[in-house]
Every structure is written in C-alpha cells, then in structure tokens.
Image (cartoon, one colour):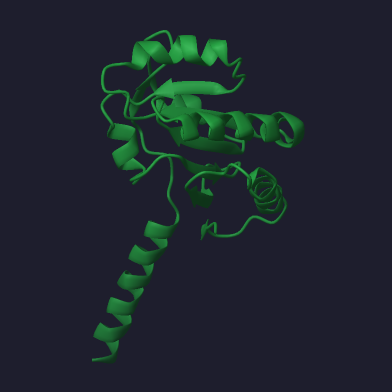
Length: 172
C-alpha cells in the first residue's frame, strides 16, 4: 500500500510540476507580411522574452501595448529582454494589423495567431495577457489583464525574475 501511495504521489507531483513549467509550444504563426513562421523561430534560446497577447480591435489592448513598449524601451531592451506581441482574435482582419503597427511606431516583434492555435496551446482565455519567459524559455511569470498603470511593477517583476530565476508564478 505504501508503494502504491508513493507511486501515485510521484506521478501526481510530476504532473503538477509539468503543468507549472509551460514551455513554448510548436505552433505556426504569421508575420506581418503574411509569411508563415514557427514559434520556435521566434523564441530563441538565451533570450528572455516578454510575450503580450492582444486584440487589435480593443483600445485597451492597444494602450497596453503602447505602455509596455515604453517600459520595454526604457528599462528592458537594454537588459537583453525581447518583446513579442501576438495578435489574437483578428477574425480575418489581420491585414489591418501591419498598418496599425507601423502607424504607432511599435518597435517590438508582432506575429499573428490567425486560427487561435497558439492562443489555445498557451491557455490564453482573455487579452491582454503578458508572460515572461527566461533564457531557457521557461515560464517565469504570467499577468492576466491590462498592465496600464502597472508597467513599472511588471518591469520590476521581470527584472527581479531575471536576476533571481524561480519557478512559475502568477503575477498579481
């Protein structure tokens, strides 16, 4: 009985730990030019990455990206942190994303999840959602909701996570 209990505990622990360390799934995305690209090509090794999922039809999502870009340019880019925005929920209007990005002078990389496959693989239910991956592409932090007004806090959490890598946490 002790052996069975230990075995079940071991399996349960490994399943729980697997659920907590979310790696980047292999999913096809589109560039702003419409070229297909695999997520593995976007999220390279040895590069901490901030990923923001957003909807182009949401003013709050766009404002969130504006504010995150400012914080990224001021504090994170020089630390070697890459910023990637994943457009979700385009509903066939993804061709409007490139002119929008150019008009707003966004300097970070933008990709389109045309069919929502990446969103589902990453368990994204609402936008915006901000995630931080370390140099090994292990999820360090996930923040659901708008960062507007909390950019400095998010930036501090990112820098702290990079200096002191720990297991995944849900940012509050």
